[in-house]
Image (cartoon, rainbow, N blue to C red; front, side):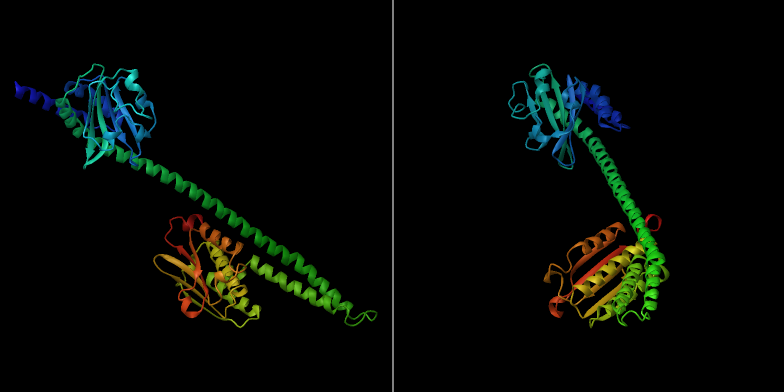
Length: 416
C-alpha cells in the first residue's frame, strides 16, 4: 500500500515535469501544473512569487482564486507577507490560520487578499537555484489547519521541479528587458549624435558661406576703397600724409578679414588633410604671435587621417586649432609639441606645451574653448582628455590636450 502511494506520487512528479516542457512564460507554467499539484497538495489557491533580479522587488503568478497579488505590478519585497521566506530567514512557512497569524500581518504588509478570500491554511516553501532563493511556491486553503509537515516535504519536491524553469524564464526576461533598454538607449544616443552631426555640418556649411561672402563682397569693397584712397593721396589740396593712417587701417582690416575667411573655410584642410592643416596653423600661429616659441609636429598616423569623413576631419582640426591657440595665447610657453598617431584601433592627436598649466590662472584654459573641444569630440564619438603634461613636475609645468578617435566604429563612414 505504501509503495503504491509512493509510486502514485512519483507519477504526479513525472506529470509535472512533462507539463513543464514547452512552457514559455510564468502564467502558462502555473496554469499547466496547478491541477497536477492539487493531487499532491490540495489547494484553493496556488501561486508562485518570483524575486526580481535586483532582489528588492517581487511579482506573483497565481491559479485558482484570483487575487490582487497577481494584478499588482512588481512590489517591494519588504511588503510581502512571506518576506522572511523570500529573504532566506526561514526554511518554510506553515500556518493553520493565516487570517490571524501575525507573521503575515505587519505594518505595510500586502496581506489583504488573505482576509478577503479567507485563506486560512497556508503553506510556503522556497524556490532555490544554486542555493539562492529566487521565489516561493504557495498553497492556500479556505479550511483551517489543512496542511502538515508531510505536505511541506511534498511542496519542496514540487518547488525543486519548478525552480529551474522559473530561473531560466527570469533570466530570459531580464535579458530581453536589458536588450530592449540597451536598444532604446542606443537609438536615443544615435539619434542625438546624428542630429548633432547634422547641425555641425550645417554650421560648417554656414561658415563656408560666410567666408565666400566676405571674400566676394567685403574684401572686394575694401580693395576698391584702398585703391581710391591711393589716388586721393596725390590730391594736392590734401596734406601728403593725411590719408596714410586710414590706408594702414584698411590694410589691417583686410588682413584680419583674410584670417576670418581662412578660419571659416580652412582650404588647407580641404585640399591636403588634417595633418597638413594642423601643421600650417601651428606654424602660422607661432609666427604671428611674435613670441619665441619652439614648435614641432610629428605625424605617425600612417596617413589614416586622410581617410576620415570630412565632418570628422573638421572636428579634429578645430580641436587641435583651439588647443594650439590656447597654448600660445594663455600658456606662456616656449615650446609646443603636436603628435599625431594611431594605437589600439584608434587615432589620436596630442597638443602639449611647457607653459604655466591650467591651474595657474582662471583666464587661461577656462571658458567656452574647452567646452567646444569636448562637444566636438563627443559628436564624433571621440574621447577628449585635458590635464597636466606628463612629467610636468620634473620639467616645469605644462598642459596636454589629447583626443582619441576609435577607427573601428561601424557607423563611422556612413553617418559621421
